[in-house]
Amino acid sequence: EIQLVESGGGLVQAGGSLRLSCKTSGFPFNTYYIGWFRQVPNQKREGVSGISIRDGRTFYSDFAKGRFTISSDNAKSTVYLQMNNLKPEDTAVYYCGADSDLDDDYILQAVYDDWGRGTQVTVSS
Image (tube, rainbow, N blue to C red; front, top):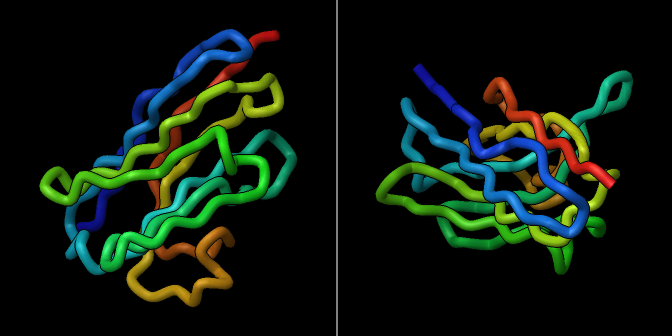
């Protein structure tokens, strides 16, 4: 059974940092794509960052470039999202998704096969 468990969310002041974790199990981690997405009520799930575990390529949405960093620990089957200089508009539930086969054009699209339950990130002004 494929499982993804997000953690690391919380309440932080603007300008602060958080590191989110996506612990995975139940699939061959080294061959997958893992993506981070976020969603606020009544809005579509938005791509934040993605990584191809196979070759290490990383992808970022424009708002994440320069502030967020995605990384993986293959031994732990875990992907991290380091978020720095957080802004109130970053407030959302953050989800990780896993997929075995994606075209680069879809890495930041919410079309992944499997999802975690999310972790809340709240940034106060």
